[in-house]
Length: 230
Image (cartoon, rainbow, N blue to C red; front, top):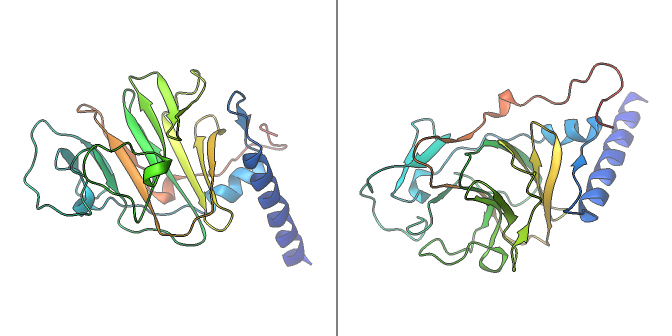
């Protein structure tokens, strides 16, 4: 009986998430209910940067969780897997099925997070948008947060997250972004995924790091009693 109740609750939670994210309004901040947030966090993944993909201008930490722009370009062998224009890197492993969630502590001036399709070209300065195989959020100049659709979709100016949660449901064709500290939905891409997707990270900041948070540090909502976010 307990197992049936658990499966029923998971199904209800999934239906809420799928329905709400497909009916999103970008001019409205939507807070995530307790059960849904727990379900998202249950999909937490360890994501480590792939040094073979990193732009030579980027500095990566030894543990593969931090990156920032350096002051000098480091020598690096040319490779179709390496970004040589935009200041980006991808995670070591891609996803072609299942649910996955990771969190990123982003900078204050300029960053981008999301996913890159396996077929996406990484060389040069072609726009990293939905037409070129990238599904991302980007902050520019510290004030302009947008989803890089075609044309770009500007998000409300009040949305300036310091910690961004990225949630991928491959089978449902959804990639969603959240403000972790406010537990608020930012934006969702809806698409029929047909190829491997790699977590993408980008920054041009030279003072502060962009940090991929370890999966073990993420905590689901622990509201005492009735959830404060329903």
